[in-house]
Length: 312
Image: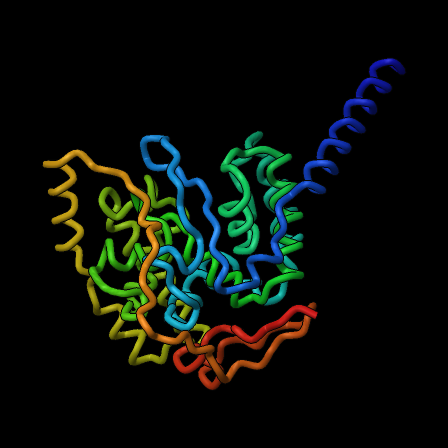
């Protein structure tokens, strides 16, 4: 028995040493603080093939923070990570609940990832479900919170999320589903895209489960109303609006008649001469502080979510 315990301790020590070395050689995150910085990552299409994808202004569908509607930012925050402005990269309570759930189900289905963790995973890690990857994800998320503003993390997150077959980023998603720039998205369209994020391939694929996506987008709109992001009139108008599913059906017909060709949208674009403007009107949140709730006075309808927040 003592020999078994000794072997287990040696194995644990070796594993911890491996984790320590892996984290020591993790790529730097400080470069991401530069809004002009571009890098290339690998993304997977729905056939399992990898393709290069440019993260940064050299991607023609890249959408700077100032052009992303505040409703889009708040939709993903309230639906995906309501404590985004309070945590330092990971949510301890959510992780405890996820561990308890996974132990009960004997699986690794619930990840409890924050927006920062999801951004770290999309930029630096694979999608494998393992304890090792999760530890690396938490470590990178913590480093990102030390180096980047909350606004920059949201900008990165929304520009790398998967929204369809080789559709990555809110800029490409807005064009693919609605034929418009991300800056022109309505609150309903913002909620619609945010509703797809948990599973754009199957569970929340609008081509297969449109009613399910619409139902979840209604829930997100209610959250936006409850938190004061939308006024009552804006909320009712958004509920009454139907996404342009006709355009989506046209794409379905085209996919049926023509085999899909997967290519990365990450080609360099010319400078369009439009200068990105920083949102105003938000109070910066000190490290470890609590962000103000998006009340009507502090609503993102006139300002973006804490874009000026700097880590100390």
